[in-house]
Image 1 (cartoon, rainbow, N blue to C red):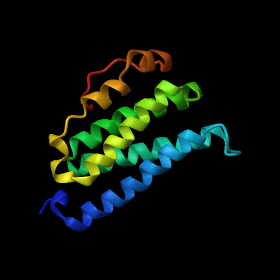
Image 2: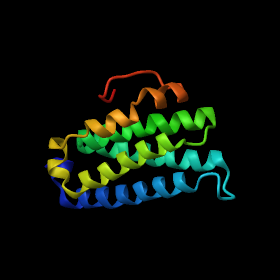
Image 3: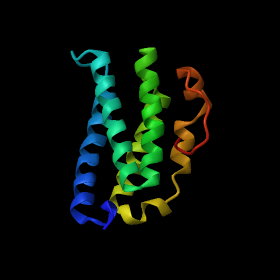
Image 4: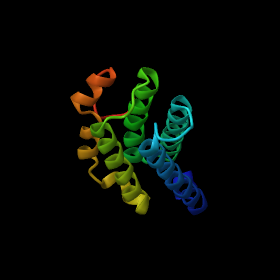
Length: 141
């Protein structure tokens, strides 16, 4: 049996991913307002996005992986440039987080859902150029 067919594995992935998505959202919305150092916050949310991407890759949930991959790129660029997320970045990230939550509601059918609008927001030229992220296609590498 494949991992993605194991209900216990899927339930664990879903639970952990929902927790990570909430952590990313809360941390980004509060960044700069807490006493916690900026670098620590960005490192933590980057690791969460990376873990989501890795789990989705292992389980072959391509849409979750794609969104997490582009989210990871944005978070990495914020880490490297030491830039606070703009309203445009926050809106794109929150849209991606919300879409990933929707995908988790029906993981077996998640790869049939159109995620192009969320990917386009994450790939918006203004975001990519401002953060110095190299242009790529909408697919993960």
